[in-house]
Image (cartoon, rainbow, N blue to C red):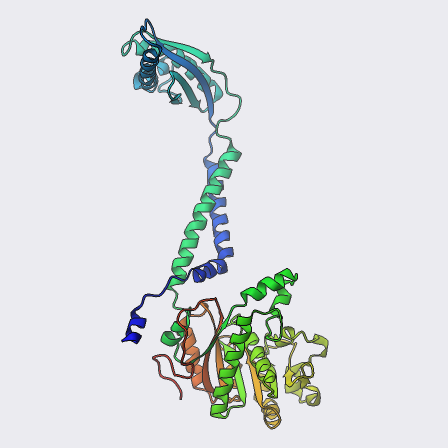
Length: 474
């Protein structure tokens, strides 16, 4: 009953998840908003027509007005309201057009009443300064011909004479800038909403509950994003390039949660390897940038810290990374593909890391012809040699979706682990990769959810159980 209630309970809105998805696509949103605002600016420039405005301010009163001052003001205000309607009437506009000897009224008028006074501002806007000035002068000269039919004894006293405008009332630079700012904000908001909607509809892994319901293998553990470690490294002035190499669990600047989640995950993986008698573990991912190299390195470090003899081999021949993570001098790093291809330098291949129980075979040279040396038996010979002397061997493989040699090398391992980055790959692609791994000779132990935010939903308590609804290799 309780389990059913837990399943039916609606998931909480994860604001951090939406913020992360927004930040991931922030550069694209900004570029889109900039492009739209530039197009709007270009359109504004193309459609631009200069306008000129002539203004006048005057007082409207009624002749022979007797009574209190307040009563006089009220009636003057009523007259001003009525007079503003006269100025905007078609009759006056027709009279002005005839006076100017044009077919139609050549300008746009605006009348503003000053609140609680009988003052009135008249603005006339036209395409040229001359038309604007002549139009407002004609209005002031002919208003009485129209007003006499509506109200009598209206007196118009000009307190600010109209002048010939000398500059545009709608300057191009200001208009384009305002348009671009408004369009940029609108486009940014629209793009942000679209990204959030699209992100919420993508069938990715965003919680440990998703690992249970969407992924067809067991969940081995969750490694959390090192948020506090980021802040500490920034305070110490670490650059972005240095920051990637600082994600090893022997770094004291890392957050406790990141370090402990990495160690707990490594402990569960070790438990499953011991259960199946596996010594060689392959760590891979579906695509790039899921953190499989960092996870591989930290599994090896965690096992070595437990007193085990561990060998970490960088088998990502196209993009070797381990020597960067551990800060190994590239000049002292061997050309591993060359050793495999020529069978020379085997005696200098294995190195010890800081005189610990962790050993490594790193590579610094990228190669796109791994097929030429994978099947020549040298790699198998190295593994067989190390099996007799090493407790655990960790293979950092290339992503499954990018190269075919990862699947070939998977047959040399006893077990495999798939690294899944939070909210990155589609669940279908992850399950397709799981099917491929299940069809190799190595046993797929499960998936590791990597780079998860502070909250990933319900915690999976039974990490040893088989999760998912698809068929799995036992």
